[in-house]
Length: 151
Image (cartoon, rainbow, N blue to C red; front, top):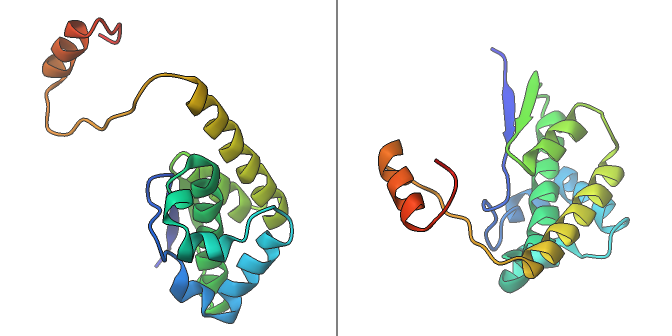
């Protein structure tokens, strides 16, 4: 049986995520390595800071850390992952899994990415929404009524 790993993107964060992983030596090792190279205590962020965890600036490094901790535990348990893919932010975890950069370099990239995205989100008016259960024509009508140029 072959296993592929799908790394989550932003929006999957929640308070106490990764706590079970952190309690294992192989999970805590990842948290510690990442903490040593960035300006955030990721464990404290994940387990105690709901308000910060919902900010792009912090959510991204938290998700990356938890993803990489899970992967490290899988490796330790002898579970071989054949392939990886990531959703948005998760692409960084997949690239790290593939050896494109080290864990520490990945953490620095993700931390900077989150900071830049936070800064520009604060400067820009706009929102994002998920559309579920509507036909394309309905979405286009809504967009046209709001003068969007999508359709």
